[in-house]
Length: 278
Length: 302
Image (tube, rainbow over all chains, first blue to last red; front, side, top):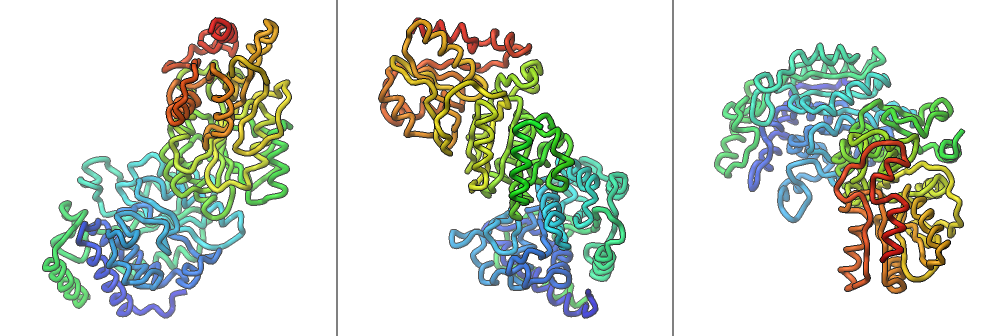
């Protein structure tokens, strides 16, 4: 599926997406730490796995992504703009009365398959959609991006049981494992480890990757595409909040960010330099 | 096979987009799972996921009919109903059983954990939600006949009781009906307690006390036409329901009266703010203001 992959092109694409996020980190801001945590994976899915034309045309057999950790929507909007599902100009309207782009996914925006924001809903919605595909005999896949803090929600574990009970092998959960939730480190508040053993014990196929290493991300999704096991799949992506901007990385102060133009200019420069290091 | 099950089966035969889902509440679904295969999903005891999964199916064009006990559906899964069905206005059906003083399988024996005595108030709060409380199985089936036309979620407060021995007007979606015609005063009720009101009605008739009884099954949107008719015709109105005194028919009537500057004399008979004392249906009923003798006394002395 992915034979034409070019790492340099991908890194350019990712950089552009990250810069798109900065356009939303002002005038009311966005959850930039959360966005930079999962943006590599979103960028990879939309640039290498998903058929963008199918998504644009809402074709029945399109792959579907639900961003259950709705706080990270700036990353999704940034990617949707970069692949042309929404116009880049639209990002300028973020948080203004001119448009409907706000802190959580709005279903009126093309590419947003279901609204989210309240934790612990997206996986149940994704299961419903996975059932829909089975009933329609469509071989698409449902991707649900879940935050690690979101694993505190009981409804997630209901979903984890149900997906296993029905062998929903068309369901792929990506856990953005940045070891942080709103205010605290996950392991200091409600310890989650071992996430892998938990999902494995619940009957899921579990996979790992460094969520900021595109070669690992690529390998994992190639493996998933083979669908060897007749099981729901979870990718535990080890990530860092605010990845790419040292000031923000794993810094609880920058879960959310609302910056002035001078700061944003500096961040743009930092992103360029970071990319050059790769 | 029960009439409710036969109805679901015949509907699914015609429309493969209907999916019957349950949170392991199979009282009204015992005979159909193996007959509809993939169109039946039991999610186990997880009401939040019941609704979330239904929402995912509905978003992709299926029509989910989600079953659970009213208390757990409307309270535990409230946010899912409000956020995942109500806000996007997804055509979908939430069927709650064991509500109010529901006589089904002696549901009144369960105690406060299982009592759904605020479900109508909660479901009326949900944006785009239609709320209906059928009084017997024939009415439930009439409601199901209309669900393909939904453009948002529907809550059915299913009394799931047998067939009532009454002459009904032809069923019209969104409209309530007069089931006993007369003068002096109007009795307004719905669901399980409508049957109790009919017992009261018979006694009143034996005393040659002319009165009317209205079946107020559609609770949202409000059927204002019939309310105008009732308020214009009757000075005295009795509002009788197995629900707490907030957010259901009593509140609808108060809001209507205030908005329309009505000064009719209205008596509200309901569960006030109380859980009812559990027991078999007859005994549980006796311990509330909804016992037929008590209703009769209030009306005859009004």
